[in-house]
Length: 119
Image (tube, rainbow, N blue to C red):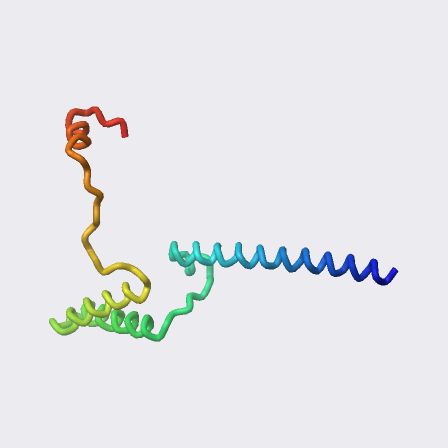
C-alpha cells in the first residue's frame, strides 16, 4: 500500500516539476518581451542596470541640466554625444543612424510608377 502511495506521489512530483519548468520558460519569455518593448516602468518591474549604464544616464542627466540652465559648453555637447552612443551600445542598439533599405529591382520600381503594384 505504501509503495502505491509513493509511486503516486513521485508521479505527481514529476508532473509538478514539469509544470514548473514550463512556467519558468513562459515567465522568461514574458520578461524578454517586457524588456524588448521597454515596458518595465509601466508594469512596475525594477530594471536592473549595469554600473556603466548608470554612469551614462547620470552624465546625460547632468548635461541636460546644464543645457536647461544655459551653462553647457561645446565640451558638454561632445560628452553628451559620447555618453548617448555608449548608452545605445550598452543597451544593444546600433549607433548607425542610417536606415538600411532593401534594394528594389527596376521592374518593381516601374510597376510602382505605373500604378501596377498590388502591395
